[in-house]
Image (cartoon, rainbow, N blue to C red; front, side, top):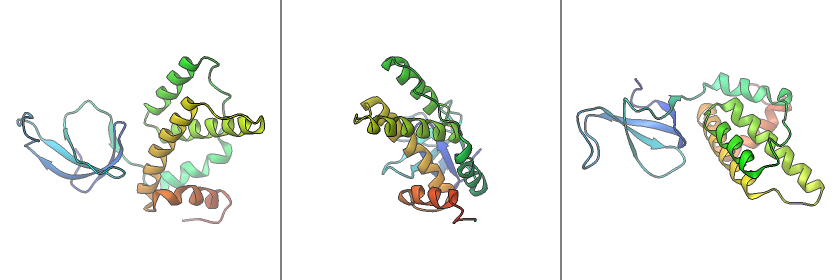
Length: 170
């Protein structure tokens, strides 16, 4: 069970902080169970979640785990586009997002980014499906790295670049 103040990764919302654990939920919701009261880090809302929920929840990465993940970037093997079928590609992207695994999200971001660079070299634009899933994967990944490293989300790309170039060793 999580405690008040804990940061966790919740479903497709991303990083949330547990601000309360209470036996009562919002008006009209069953009150025989305990609820986590979650404050998403990148949204302005409050989420009430039964402590026994089947929705995916886990502790966020530690600072060391976040740095270790970033350190793997030069060795990540970028995949070619998963499929020429738009539907199959979207299914692959969605499956990657739903793993809630930072290494998988990182690989997805890098794969789509490589595709974007290739498209730009051919004077073409990245497709809407690619853009959508790259933004979503970056949002979830950067949100978790931001919380783990205790730096602003907007500073994550520069932090990654600096760390890969050996300028940051924390």
